[in-house]
Length: 331
Ligand code: PBG
Image (cartoon, rainbow, N blue to C red; front, side, top):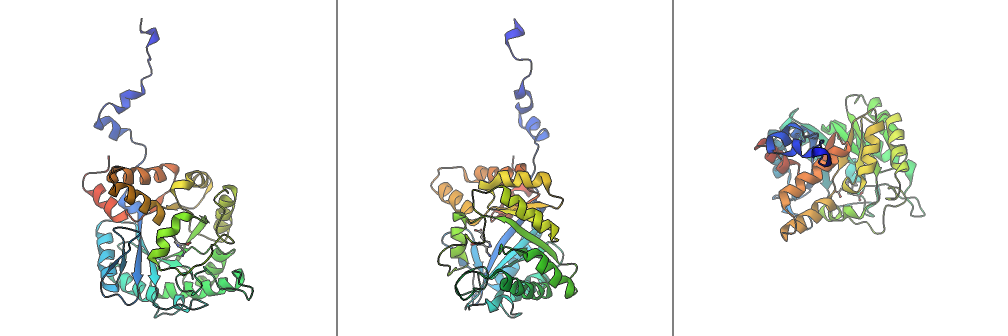
């Protein structure tokens, strides 16, 4: 009689919360989360970003206190983005020790010490008047090798300011090797490099561009990856690893979990994924209409990125998620 009934019963391991907890394959710890933060020159109060409800452009003071809150929650790190008051063709603000990002880095590094890893975006796009991630050639194209020199200068200034991990997000060829060499020459051998290796030309960066008041016209498709390409993402990462990257990253995360999984299977260095502004804002928008359960959808989205193989996740929900984890878990 029992022959027609299953003897293998997968539901045994799901029968109650104790079973489910014991057999959960993937966990999220606060230490595996990195919070991206924006700091805007000239602010005395934090200013909300309309396209990213719940996310602020910080003043130096509010950034400082949000950074110590992040440390208190046990986050792995924070990634700082600067929004300057004025911009120019070469993105001078990025290499000016008195530029907003470098000033903020100094303030935050002295505030949090070694409680978490202070990281900075190493790119020119927030500082150029044309909004591209590099400097332009006379014909208007983005000049790869001239940009590398600017990245080398920015790297040393950021390390001098106290950044411990530089996020190379510009997608110029050779950027990891160029920056590593400049850091070593300047004696910054301890400063680590996070390569945004598989960074796709994505519509999901839309809200971020509002957050940094981007002036970009056109797109970044001559340097960021074509969303159709998986192999190229892996090859970019392999090159970055060969050039000395300490960490490689896939960005965005949600739509690129195949790339995360492939990279996790082959990478000898840690693999991170960046759950970007559009991923954040889409979910927040749906949740605000009651179309998804906000907390469960956030947890599921980050769990999916970890399950695909990311060792750590950059997410705008990092602090809130850490608070949930501390406060009884996210089952
Ligand atoms: C470039 C940079 C971007 C993001 C992080 N670094 C924007 C871009 O490439 O256009 C996007 C992050 C997000 O959307 O959350 N410095």
